[in-house]
Image 1 (cartoon, rainbow, N blue to C red):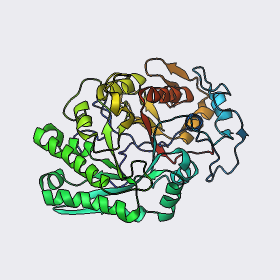
Image 2: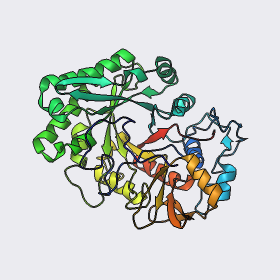
Image 3: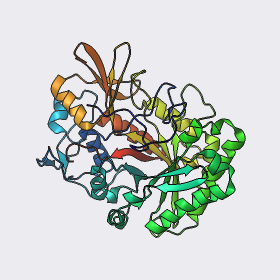
Image 4: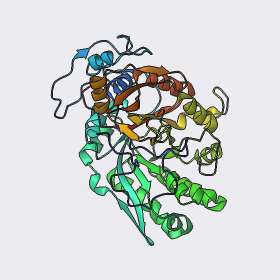
Length: 428
């Protein structure tokens, strides 16, 4: 069965239910999906373009070793509109022999989650090709005025060291679950929050952190109040400056880094809960980058593509000046979100459905032998199938759809943020 739709934070999210979805809010009815790992063809393209190509260990029930080929997916003519289910089934387990070159020049951030442990192996195998790896380990919480950083038990010293020795920066994600009134309004608590994060980086030898707080502040109404919004931005700046004060041998910047998670702008027009260009400019000197969540555009009640290209372009245009302008200095700070998951939506009156993994996708191709269609408006592939009299629409990233998005990121000079590695069902 497809994994249930859920927030990205963790399996145990004790925070109050927000009044709005906590993920990217391009559509008011679009809740954040639990993001699942990529289907084989999609990862194959990532490994080809970024040259993350190689052989992964495999978990049961798929022990067989995949075939190798000296040819890339481009050489094999697989990056195209008219791709068939048969081609995907025949080619998805074949891997490129070449793992030594990387053609995508910009930074690449890959998230790894404890509930998909294969991601740890993926990160080690391709660490030389990933500039940043973010294990989803930490939640900073408050109990009245008491603050605590949870997740230290996830730390794996050997894994972190191996990644860093291979050239990757390890920047664990911290979700700021603490009540905003505690963190933002009380200087002592604000300083304590920052000290907890900085101390954990220093003690564990991290290269910085990825901070997620904007969606939480939106849920609490912080961003609707100009004074509180300014305090929130000042908190991020203060954390970034505190991290910058700590030296790092791994980072090319010689200090610990802060990457800040931001939602993609709404196409129906901005509101107070959006992260805008003014916010980016205010934080630019204090953070190392922004993990832009350009996925989850659609949901069960509004079935459709996960990340329409026009929405991605709108998001970049909203946050950054026009391509080629002299002031486009901050485009390199954007880690463009790439979803490694698909959706299987019900087209019945009540809607429904949810996210699917690579295994689900391959199973659907094997069972229904559908005809994949290319949607020019979104630049994504999809197919329709019927099960027990109910029609379904499946949207899943393909080689071509991903290639188009990688080109877009490169045109802007932006990097990539991949949610998440670790749910692959075959080796690559």
